[in-house]
Image (cartoon, rainbow, N blue to C red; front, side, top):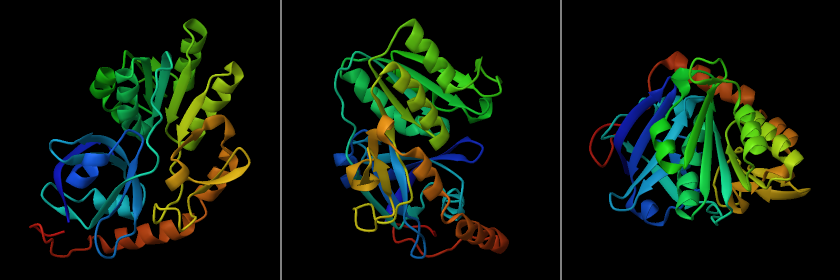
Length: 287
């Protein structure tokens, strides 16, 4: 069982949990993810590693309340435990000294960008990070991203905080004013696609981190298949990071809503019941 040692609400429907998982923390690297299960009857969901502390033996994850599992996970408190916490999974980010790099995070995507930006900075890069959200209330980890970057630029869609506009607006300004040698983008599919469309025009290498439907995380189920450069890849074992200019985003968008009806039914049933599943947690406390 994996104890939640810290729980924090970062923004409406956006939560942070720090999990005591020493074996995972010992091996975790920037760009990897875990698959967790909240209890015996829970589904397996992938969550990107937002931070790790090898000394404390903890993994930090940030998740948004979207469907049944994430809404139920949000009810868990410090001291309670998760049933399964498997990882680190996926190929770590390729880190080298590119020169001047842009790390772009949209919405909850800021969390997985954080350790990668930090690693790129430690490798000697000049890291200009751009983070954005729909409004001020949804901006989080401004301090962490600032520390992990050489420079931080922030934007909101509605202009309620700092710049008004999209992350692509700030990215275009950066490219045209200073130029960049490499771009990393993580966030909603439309945002990553827009970033890739922009950087392709300038011939700038761009990497995105994909989070498609996933079950086992070891390449066996095939749910996470994506088309990259005309070839089928499994995001869990070949990724999650890929050349953004080669990703078939239209196919990804279609696949992401395949089970939309079933997901709604599951969420409706959970909210109708109004309670979460309980069982006795072996590490103490009831889950």
